Image (spheres, rainbow, N blue to C red):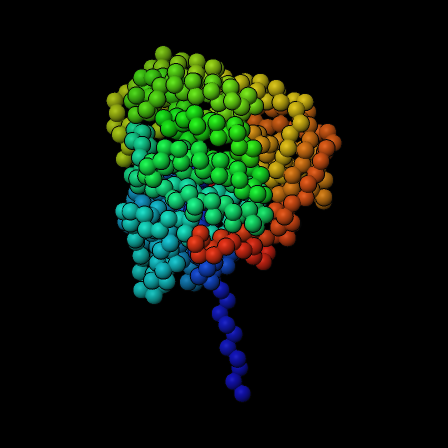
Length: 493
């Protein structure tokens, strides 16, 4: 009697993400595609059969980080038969065949426009025993039509557009992600409803220039209308969006934010520079007066709004007067937080070849002055929150010291991070609690007092059971919350 042949164990995978929220959301799609093709997440600490590096071309030293990771994986692959390495994302779109030349042990290279090709390319590379490089110049399938393995049971990304029509001289994204493509509103709302049906409480509408949504549809009111439509979805408690552009930020969006109860009073509005001269060189189509005017109107409509920003220090040609103008705008704007960056040359951008590249020491000194100013402003703004009662969506992984302090962490409706005294045996990530702020630091708040209210949610039930939504893709089926998955591999970033 012949011995039954044991079925082959499913191949395991890990997706490691670099870069922005777009890449994080794309990685959810990549995981969903692999699982739909029979792959399973690798156990924590195990060497996966397939490693996917979803790359960024914007962050400093992005290429060094990629090749450093690939160098490490080369030694792992030598000792693991059948292991495959795939590289996708913005750096793959930019460098194309260079990746395989520099790292010939890579099996698959794919770009930002064809993430849906990954399973086929992996199979082809295995069959042909040769690297497969496929870079599309235009969007092949809108990402939200693809399956996704969601990272969170309580908060979800929802793409409303991909690509960007701006030509900022410091940014390479438009050439890598292409021109803006808008999704139909009905598809967006279908995806939001599907996530809410599975217990998700919060969605973040995502676009490279999110408030330009509607340009391709010929409807300048499309984004404001979309926010209002989200307000009609029962069970959706919080709506956020990122990132808007001051050029396209209109009063109807402010009205929609103020008048739609589940739209959070949080706004991330990139400034980049407070100098009109530098803004012009950056090809940012607004000036500091217009920018501050937007903030004034936002605060008139929503006095409790928390406003954050992005700022680049040391752009080519920036003088001391230009930098002082940035400090002046920061002082006037009173941002709750600012994400600050020292300018560094990005090959392929117009700014990389501009005259007036500044010495590192000058950029560093200005950067430190900006940080000192913004740290004080952030602290002052947070001190104003002490004594305020806040509703928190309890989070996981937000408080790195929670295990040592015995606290839990969550986000207030305005996006501020709050560490609070809570019983982790009773309160779960995904639940909602109400408490009072007792202490302020520049980057977080603390609530040491009692919990005033605790609401258990379906999202909390799913977190407790180790379940996360798996989205089949809008138009291809509703999300399902699967069985508890193995712990995912550590994410690099």
